[in-house]
Image (cartoon, rainbow, N blue to C red):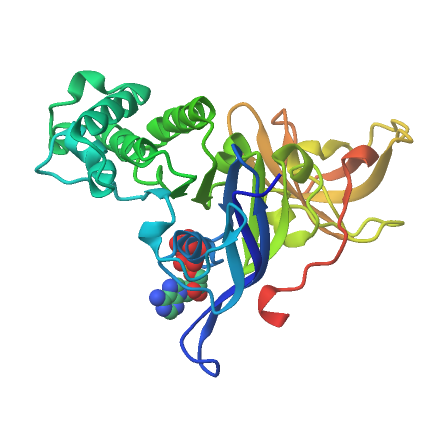
Length: 340
Ligand SMILES: Nc1ncnc2c1ncn2[C@@H]1O[C@H](COP(=O)(O)OP(=O)(O)OP(=O)(O)O)[C@@H](O)[C@H]1O
């Protein structure tokens, strides 16, 4: 099936070749119809630049962009049939919700009756039919973002682009709105691409997560494949692996803090063959109520551990058990993006 959006070796350099910034480099991407893709990575990794190139606001300085199989590298934004939702809701304050949501359809010169009908349906989709005649200023932040979503969906775009749409909302509402976003995407069958720096958001929403670093692709795939098997140290660190110990008999490995087991050094308990055992000394204990975060110094570096009890103190000798099936071998030792 032809991808809805395809990037072939796409790059963008801001400024001159000599002094510029390579915001995005040599990016290949194929977004399948009806899927939810997230562009994930730390600040400055090129997420927004990528999204803006797909929208047509920024022209790639290398490579090409295909929309529905047709080269659209030089197609202006208004001819791309793309819906956008931004962090700032960008609603018209003097217009009713119906008029805000119908805006894109009116700009496309659709008949008034159709505009009214589709705006009504889009407002219903986001649960705001009852507020159709109100103005944006009378709504909460979460409601305003639903209006922005309804407006983007109303034009029946071939792709919905979402630039950190939830980051202005408080933590509880953000989690609620993620669910809402996913429901709307599933119900409409739209193809969505969302920019975020929040790995929980990406894990929850994505069919495909695309992890960027320094403008380059580090790893992509569905969350259930990527999360347990980060390809390299950057991805592992970004997904919270946090431990990169030297383990005798292994190359570069990582393990999540919640998978490291600690026992007292003196138990005499035989190490299970399914675990690798290390010796260490507790460096610090951070009490977290339901568990403690324990930092342990070992000969192969420091290990962070999520421990269920509060029974260790700094300075204590401990045995560390690393279940073999939890050790993730990293395909490559991480090379900082700037050094490539
Ligand atoms: N208009 C611009 N002129 C010059 N450099 C720019 C411009 N816009 C972005 N950049 C640079 O390009 C790189 C990628 O920026 P981009 O905004 O795409 O990153 P991002 O991952 O979306 O970051 P954030 O999460 O902070 O929004 C950064 O180094 C940034 O400083």
